[in-house]
Length: 444
Image 1 (cartoon, rainbow, N blue to C red):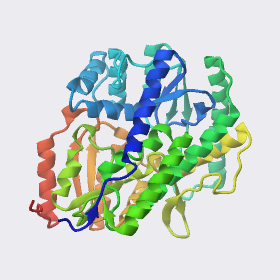
Image 2 (tube, helix red, strand yellow; image 1 turned 60 degrees about the horizontal axis):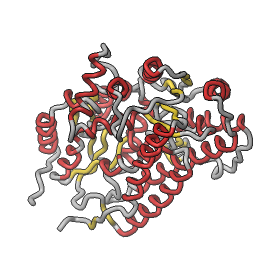
Image 3 (cartoon, rainbow, N blue to C red; image 1 turned 30 degrees about the vertical axis):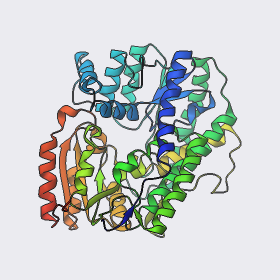
Image 4 (cartoon, helix red, strand yellow; image 1 turned 120 degrees about the vertical axis):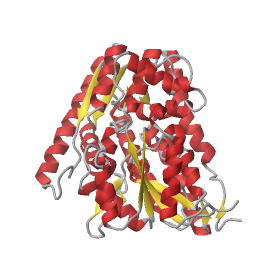
């Protein structure tokens, strides 16, 4: 018997259905010759939603290929080797390499040939992303565009309102230009009503996911990190759709019920941890190994914040779910209003982006907020060679935690390239860490 009661999530099957439905839609669009848009999922994916289209996001697709490599190495090693054979180096973004390898191999991990999009639309959120889909477009022979932006208070604090206004106007104007460009290259008419709906749904679904994460402050935690990877992905893949809003409303109600009844994600929770950076998708069993010591990772800056939805409350000095347009009493009526609000949302509430290419006080503050409010005992830091954006400054973070007496475990790896991960060494590091914090394996 464990310390707490536990039970499966009732909406687990729906989450799986929605995830697979995204890729089934892409397969059908490919076979029917209807519109596909590709790019990074941290781009403005509501922007092309003014068309009837299916969106193929590179990062979750890369994670799927890495995970599929557990059973069939060709989806991991094989795609990496295909990109390297074309002279793309191993020190590039692992998602980028696995995506290029999939395209060059003409293989789609969900079946059939790789789906060539009508055009690629990217947001330049890190040093790699903008070039990633420029390369994809060159190989595919399709048009490419990229929206550039820098979040508010990035590498600075107390940024002036005028600076923020200029950033918002800059991004809004880019969005309006991209809409005209999409109409030109696709030959299709952009539907403002569909776009406005998509902006509303994206804001609401990501705010709801933040509310779900807030429930995880409960002791015991109602979700663990490995479980969250199958839940936050709905916001990553399809946050601009009404179905995502509906799913997160159901999930939020279920999580609140679990918290009220004391239902745990892990029945022997004794030591609460958080994780930093993306996980090694090919070796997620490390999260289950933690549980042998009574330790559980209950989230991460990454899984909490990947698709935005958080606002900093200065009065309370904490991060809270951001208010979507309807909750804020705002009605979006025109294309221009939707672009203006959407720009503000991405610039202000995408807290994850403040850890990309930057390791300063902004990220430390967010990590400390999670440690304090989610009652964290220690941290697990993935020194991730596959994503230089999230890996920047991790040792500075380690020092920050050490100065505050917060135990932290570091392990080396790569989010998608299994060749750069040593499971036995990682297990040894976990064993050593658990010994230093006074945890021993729970007798079976």
